[in-house]
Each structure stands twice: as structure tokens, then as C-alpha cells.
Length: 376
Image (cartoon, rainbow, N blue to C red; front, side, top):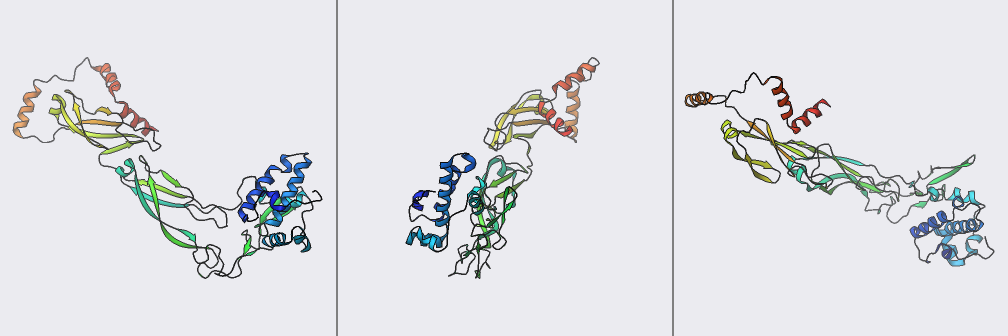
């Protein structure tokens, strides 16, 4: 360090009215820039590293800062405050600073809630408010945990850092301070509302935007909507919403595709007709060709479920079912017998193996898809 010390505010590039957060942010930036491990053999960087550490040591402590603001460099010195003996002393004092981006302050707990949706709600998406029970900042003490009119005291055991460094061989190990339990402060008179915990339990309404295409078993994460951190400066946990989607009487979902059954009478399948097919957006007319076979399938592109990640929509597969009546009136029975005399018989000797192979090739792709999934 040079014989003539520079102004501490100048060293950290701060205005004299800088708050505690600005001081710490500026020092962290300089400490990372001039850290010895990042500047091996650079004596100039080491001097700036020590200079910044001394400036931070004085300005981050309210008592030392008050003496410095009033009397300059002589103020803290006459009160018995001195700089550091070396690099290891700096690492020991500010072990929380040298985490290289890793946040040592514990985050809050995550909250898990369930939400039940109808099939159509999940397919179309919606906005819904849910009630979540979680801890919130105590309004009486404004989250300090101290009785109104009093302030938490800086912990003497760790100097307000929340951690105590221990030398173990060549390594410096930091552990939470036992006196303040890692908080950095000690509450002498507790807030009567929160009993010193700084938080109270409250039910709050949270707005949730459910994306179209959400499926049963999916979950949605809302960042920082969980429990608050138990320590000041820590991030809140996350809120996870687990979805239960009720089945629909008309549609069967397979990924982003939908399957719907449409019944036909024997006459409609033979002669052809136009039927209405339910879709997510309302009914659509579908032309049924004459001679349609039972279990035939027609694909309506882009009529399925919207992809939950916004990648288009699936298809709607219409399965045409030919319903055979179980009971007939005498007149209808007679007409069917008369019709049977004029219909060709499907049972032919030449069908044999070739017919079986043809039946296999005629099987719909959608049916094969479902069968293969069942095997898995």
C-alpha cells in the first residue's frame, strides 16, 4: 500500500451517500477483478486488491464509516481499527464475498399445489387464481424481526457476515455463525407479532396462466412464488403446480393428437352420407364415402391439441363405427333378408392367406400406434 492513502470512496468508485448494497456490489466487482488467483504474479493487482479490501472494511461497518466520514483515515485508526495483515486475513474476513457467483444465502422452500382441470380447460388454456398459504414479511417489524422502535444488532461473533472462517491446513473453511445462526444480526427485543421470525403465515391469491395443451401429470413452475428465504438477501423458493386433467366422454388424447368415434348406421356406411364431427373448436361436417368399412379412420389435420410449447397443433383422427342393431321389427327383418340375397358374400375360398395379409396391411396407422404403445 502506498504511503498516501486514497479516499476510500474514491477507491471503490462510490459517492459519499452510497448505501450498504452499493458498497458491497462495488467491492465484489473489484475483488473479483484483482483477485490474486486471477492475476498471478501481478504485484499491482495485489496492491489494488488489498486497497479495495481496506476500503470495504471501513465503509461496510457503520461505526467505522462514521469515524472515517468525520475524521478521515485517522478516525478509525485512533479508535483501534486497522487494516489487514495479509491476503489470507482478507479471505478469512470476507469469505462470503469470494464465492465467485455462488449464492451462499439459502433459498426459501418450494411450495407444491394441485390444480384440477376439465379436458377442455387443459386443451384451450385459461387464467385462474389459486389460493396459496405461505409466509410473508411481517408488516409490524417490516421483516426485521425486531420490536418496533428497535433494530437488530450486528453479530459480534462473525462481524455481521453470518459465517466464521476456520483454517484447516492450506484450506479456509467457512461455517455458519452459531451466535446468529448465519443471519449476521442478533435480535435483542423480538417483534410481538412474528416473535422474531420476521414472517407470518398468510393465505394469498396467485394468478396462474395455464398454457393451452397442458396434460395430465404435467407441472408448472412459478419462480420466486414459494416460501421466502430464511435469511436476508436470499431468494424465495418456487411454486410448483401439478395438474390433474379429467377425461372427456368424446375425445381420447394421445400426445397432441385426438381420437373421436363417430357412429354410422349400416345404410349410411353403404350409401355414404355427411356427418357432424365434434372438434375442440365446434362441430365440422365430414363426408362419408359410400362403402365405408367399419373402424375406418379419417384424419383432420391441425384439429388436435395445441402443443404446450407453442409448436403447432396435433391432428384429429375420426374413427367411423358401423353400428349393427340388436333388435329389428318384423318389417325391417324381412327387408334385411331380401337385401342379403342381393349382397355379395365376403367368404370366398380364394381369400385365404392373401386376404389375411391384406387385412393386416389395411390396419390403420393410428390403431397400430395404440397397439404398439400397449406393448411397451
